[in-house]
Image (cartoon, rainbow, N blue to C red; front, side, top):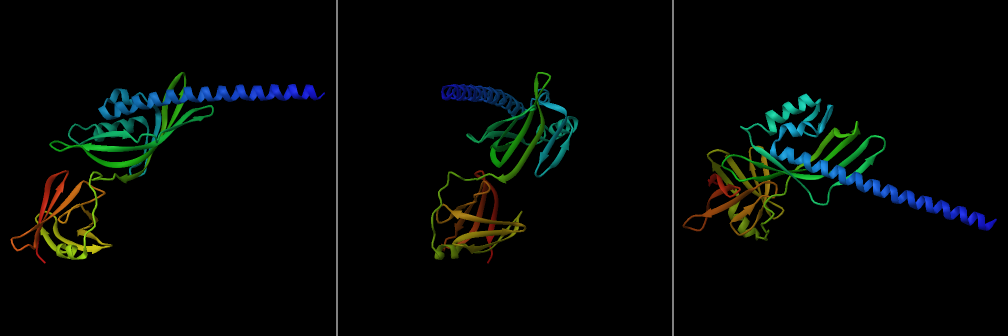
Length: 258
């Protein structure tokens, strides 16, 4: 009797083991398929290959964007792409995946879900490409009639991408910071007020409010945009103006007036 029970348990465990191996192999195959499709899709996105781009979606496709809201239907989606992302008169956008962030999950009796994190770069005429945003994505893939197509796409948690990551922050004394704080006047920006906050400089101009970090005694950088701020001294050793650069190019000069 005990021998019979032992055989049954062994057979049961063997079946479970075989099942686990089979599921693991199926999941691996699914993952490879979705990752391959995902790579082709984003290639069409980055190159504005519109005809290839549209082949990845069903007609009643829905796109959910945390800032743009809902876009319903493939026709509306393609119109948005042609007039926005792939408009030859506008800036171009390039997407890169954050390595190690992508995961693929099976969706029973439907297809699969892929999710991850990515960053976006923008390039404009006569300007260098710049990193702008980081976000998360979730795509729902459906397998139907021997074809894989996306039915739903979610793009969310858009945040300004970290900037000036090559710059190292140093500490400055209050004495040095005090020589910089004050009121500046700029031709385009208007009045700029610089104060101290938590041993850093805070720059206010209109609705803009930003903390900047010292790289040297007279050069500061912003971590949420590609801006740097250089403070120039006059012949008497006093701060006379601020030079604002974006991606290394001068964007504004502000004279210290107070």
